[in-house]
Image (cartoon, rainbow, N blue to C red):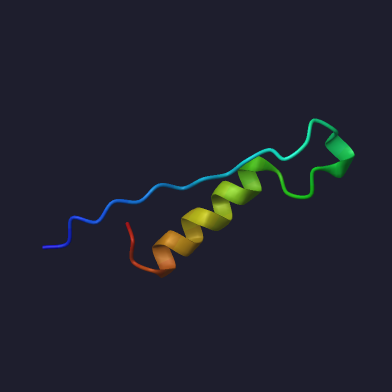
Amino acid sequence: MNNSKFFLYARKSTDVEDKQIRSIEDQISELRAFAKQENLC
């Protein structure tokens, strides 16, 4: 039985909207896709 735990981490790197490259929602979406691809969830 695998009891490994993990969490997804997204961050806002700047308060200046036009300098924020990826939205938080976009980061979370990509992290969830990666977790699913790696069978982490």
